[in-house]
Image (tube, rainbow over all chains, first blue to last red):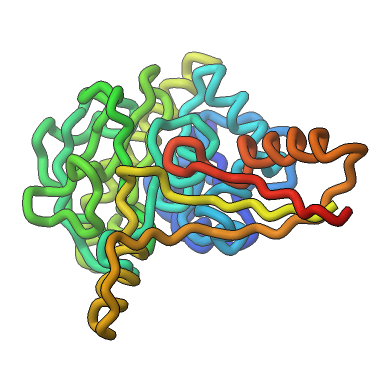
Amino acid sequence: MKETQPRIGVVVFPGSQDDRDAAWALGALGAEPVMVWHGEEKLPALDAVVLPGGFSYGDYLRCGAIARFSPAMRAVTEFAEGGGLVLGICNGFQILCEAGLLPGVLRPNRSLQFICRDVAVIVERMDTPFTARCEAGQELLIPVKHGEGCYHLPPELPQEQIALRYAPGDNPNGSEADVAGVVNSAGNVFGLMPHPEHAVDPLLGSGDGALILASLVDSARERLYARA
Amino acid sequence: MRAVVLVRPKAGILDPQGEAVESSLRQLGFTVGEARVGKVIDLEVTADSPSAAHAEIERMCERLLANPLIESYEIELAEDA
């Protein structure tokens, strides 16, 4: 079984919070999670990387602004530029935007309040390595928990890069065009504000997040086979 | 050399903090137009000349202190070195 387990790195920054939940969920879905400390200058052999949620470097200056300069992020940027699969969840999404690996930027919520609740999101793209287990137009119930999730949409961003939107009427933070998740133009980097790792078991309210993480595990496994 | 960097949300960028400040001021009876909230960063830099300091701080702004997508910045150098 071991040889079919893709290795998915979870980068741990000072202030990361959801790294262990992400690792647990990836493990439960058939991957081998590998924790990567933010000070590491080189990534171990990995088939995908997850940047977890939390408050890296205390969210000082701007969310993700300081984390993007950590040694591990330099390695993740190289990994992404080489076509490697990178998923950023919440703070991970903020870091990817600050690092320029994803377009746009996440700003304080329209309400200025920290929001922690389940939201309905619509899958706009199912032809990505992160959403292949979903159906186009499928509605997923996944929790958000953030103070700065209001996506500022660069005017030139092609519509097809908006992979996930909040369902009509369920935009929690004032995100432009209801954006909940964005994929890069090459399709190998994806960031989203909702937390799929907190929705992998119906016992905890929803299992819908598993569709996203299992898509990633499938895609990482394909990379593993391609390497072998 | 001491410098002050002012970082502001660009025009047209949603600024909910500014809006909250604006409405609070109005509730207190003040007559105000639009309010915007930015950041002040006080810096101490070592440089051979004011122009060298300015250029160095500009690089800091572009790389870290401001996000050029949504923020503009201004650099003020203190007269006394």
